[in-house]
Amino acid sequence: MAESTGSSEVGLGDLLRRLRRRADLSQRELADRAGVPQATVARVESGRAVDPRFRTVERLVRAAGAELRFDVGGDVGGDVGGDVGGGGGEGGRGDPADVPHDELRDRADRRYPAHLDVWEVREPKDWPGAWWAAWYTLPPEKWPLPLPPATYELNREYRDRRRARQCVRDAVTVRRVTGAALPTTSWRFVAELPGGELVGELRAHERSPHLDWGGPERPGAREVVLDGVLVAAEHRGLGIGRRLVEALTAEVSRAGIGAVHAVAEFGGIGLLLACGFALQASRPAVLRLEQRVEWPVARPVSPGPPPGCWPPPG
Image (tube, rainbow, N blue to C red; front, side, top):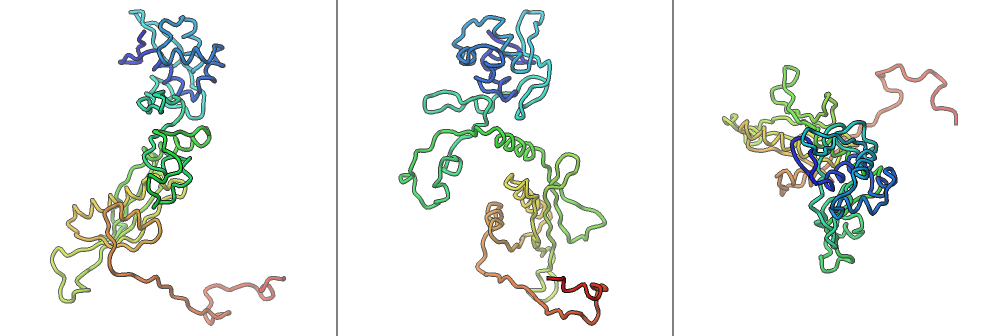
């Protein structure tokens, strides 16, 4: 039996998996809502229930937050008739989206649960069970456990955060800021969410390399110095910083500028290396200027505390 969802036709089992994912329900939870055994849901989704009763199908579809309708040809179709429950639901109203990991199988050649977010495991850091993932020099033949083909997260709160972060990753746009308020030698890029919320920023400036060489400025000799990249703390790890740097390098290339200089530390080094930067032989030093300030100063910039208020009582 095939069901129509919009302009395409899918099997009943695939349709039920899509609805169940959108409603964020496991097979057991859907069965409890529909008042049928969990084995019935499993048989329908796997295609082993060759001709399930209409009443059973109707109860399952309604329990997943949708309703059945008949078209002129008599086909059964899934058409959402109300809001779908579950914090991690996808799609809202309309045809249910495909289960993104339906092609993945475990070692027993079984599909993974539709309502979970499943990802492939290619290296230890992809698998939460790989407690040795930080041991970068450990060769694969000495890994304590074999890696599974894929993994997933059972915690719904954690899963919802992953989905929300994915929505941010998909929605962010990067653009260069120009206008009379910025100097012509200034390069500023921003990462924004729909509505204009700022979630990341890159600033850079041009410098005159001929001052290093001496003599007059050479035609076309321009360089850019990267001042910094900043991404909102709650949105880090989504590739926003890399998109900002790549936007800068692409724009610099179009402008005919041959070099971009940067000084970075910690995670910033890996970010720039991933964007095509190369380590230089020179080792810049980190310097800081501290000046001794007397109290009270001869020319205070503010009136200071009233007499008797400083130092505070112990």
